[in-house]
Length: 425
Image (cartoon, rainbow, N blue to C red; front, side, top):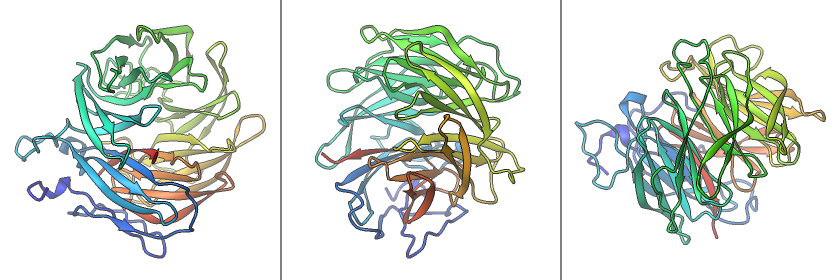
């Protein structure tokens, strides 16, 4: 890869005896890996981490594509196994012959972990990959052009037969793609257009902007937070045809200018939590799985009371035991602003008996713009991806998340935007 410009290189570094949080991206970094020790026996098996990234100058990106890491048990040993190169969108730089399209920014694994899927932000493509069960590496199966711009999220239905993709660019929509017997993708089966009046934000709410599409814990309902219409939609998927149909009623209306972005369901209670990007808030909903309806209960800021600058909330997750919720906050007024200068935060909230939230802490991510956070397969550790400062930071969940303890190891990789985890078979 030495023929590629330094903007498209990647580094994994050790943090030594204490976790050090860089706040500026390195000017040039070389592909390598690092190892750091932690408490032994925390994991019983090898895991693979798949990291998506942004790769284009339009996004001020330094990503190289999709990177695959081997995470060994006990020692938290991160070993770079593979880089799937992606186009950087620059006609003046050399692009590898086997490069996938630009910005493989969000990833999803199928239910049995044999295939991985990626959307290509700012483009019109979705790609599928076979996962080698022996070492976790990826082989491209196919890339389809859906003809709609800026896919930002994707999920598999419970059967693994349908891939559901949210397209953000106005007029945003949700598309279903059939998954073939070998894991590759077929042509689009259905397109769900979302109704409503755009919110008042002059640049972020110009029309429908679905930012996510996920199934509820029953697998019966597809829930779609729409940033542009200030609505959280609920739809049903016909598992035979791939057709999507809005429920009746088809949505929960939020406050204007909320900009709902992502949703997380409680693991064993009828509750759902939506992070609202534009106001940086979290709304608690009662979830009626029988009727497919959301009833709002309360809304709290995702940022600390001392936060006086612009912020755009990003990701939300509930701990495995269901006692705590985590929300990532990105400083700045959107991707066009630099964010910082101080590190961004993860808001930690206790989930109370009535389902509402109680603020516990705001923990530094040690970097800027944590677009993604999520737990690895054991549910004992949380990872945040700082897109602007090129770091992936891990935390131990103490007391099911009551405390976030920084790990001794962190990764540096260009413009990370998503991590998905797979336990070795």
